[in-house]
Length: 572
Image 1: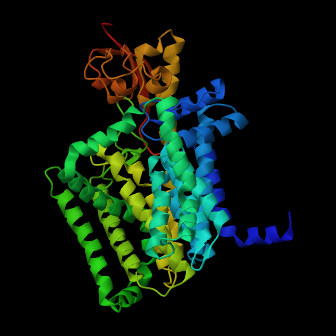
Image 2: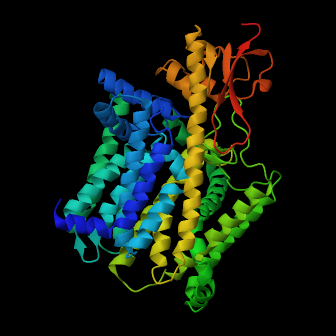
Image 3: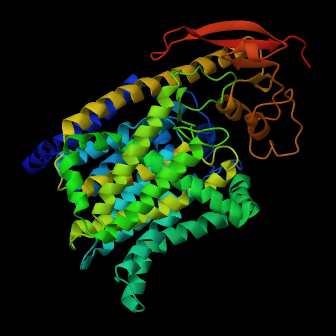
């Protein structure tokens, strides 16, 4: 290795330590377990079909475009062999690459090496992002490729210069991001809006060339994808339903949804940036004095930000059914990490009633600090760092908007899903650290907070995968005693992976399970008759008798926990 490379690596030791900690956590978490979690069975089955049959398939129940992720998983299957654990490994790798891109973004924003590494640690180890990094869901893949695209756009577009090669490379990754989730189409759109807002494009040939560099490849990928839906891939039933749902809610419903999501997004951004906010505590007095001396104009956006936080928190807390953080729990909630889509689910991990309230207060307070920090820097001298922050903020604004379309499906069930928000997290971290470049922070406090969060995230993710592993082991036991998969309900991932085949689970097909069946039976596995159920709580299944009991190991729960195989007393 050249001496210059060694010197460069030595200078980047804070980042290397963070990445090493993330890699070490992958050895604690059962990363290579051959199990699926929640919806990622569909993407894993698509990779299996690609690997075994050489055929690209995206199931009609899949809401995301997913093609880019399936191809990425196919590459890992080609190199390491096709298992569901290898698919999870592919996510860990792409998330790590996205973290390196975030580091590059932070450096372009003028953030020091130490603080940039701090930002990467906040990003990687926040519980929601960390949990998703150990799945094969589209959300972490999209977030990471978005960061790679943003890093190249920031490096390619600077005041007074336009690096054509880097911008075209960025546009390729933007297109790839679209082939993972539809919101990728908003990345080149946001860059075009930034170029227009900064008067770098106009009505001339040079501007047309720049726009083509920014968006031609993503546009070609978008057109190619939707043409493939017509002639190659199956019609994406779930994807087409989003537009129908949006139309069904109308303008008034959309207004309510936007108002709700705006506050929820602010609260979650506050939760993610708590470690950075904690590092400001010893400097609150001096920082507060700086804010007070700011120009009056900056108090207007700050007042709007704080009013949104206050009204949102008050509205949800005084509703008929008060809500506290985490507001839209799917992968991160009071049961720990991971969704509750297995019969019986898991016990409440946190039973103290004040914990959600304390988390809500901390999140809102941190979000208020984030607003102070960003509003303070709205008017700053022109510089390459400010230009980079402006471009990153524009990407973040459009991704903020991008949360809305898939959230219509959950408008009556909480408003959205937490995993839809993770592309916003690294952008908020980057902008906050950029805005604090001139503020002395007690970074040891932030590092201690991150260390504690990392320990929790690792243990909770490990527990979730151990829990799902116990469920799948029980499903395999049922197979070993002669039970067919059409007789077993073992949760959404097991049922989807073992039963769903494209086109056979259409609405209108007879549901064989006793009513009311879980949602995943209707969506993925209408042929299952639920003669046997794998559950963590046999008491909720009247008319069933216990066939087998197995304990599974958990670190964060004190009492023993079990998975049960139960059988219908009188088979249908």
